[in-house]
Image (cartoon, rainbow, N blue to C red; front, side, top):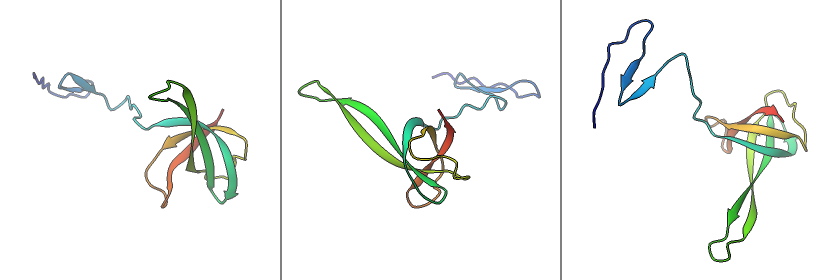
Length: 104
């Protein structure tokens, strides 16, 4: 494995292991999921149901799985039935590790 090191100046970025680290371009590695708000009864928290499909190992038939996530909603603006995008975040409470970004 070859490691390249270059000197960092004001306008250049450091290259190591062939990967460029540019502080101006931040790429979010947080997961984003699309789902539907199924409960808005809690204050600043919404329950979002996310559907995804799996293929059965033996029968090769697709089936749907639904996972529910508790997501943070600071302004209580999203209501039941809204299609939303949620993003992974730091733990906000015992079960809340997602926050709602926007409505679709």
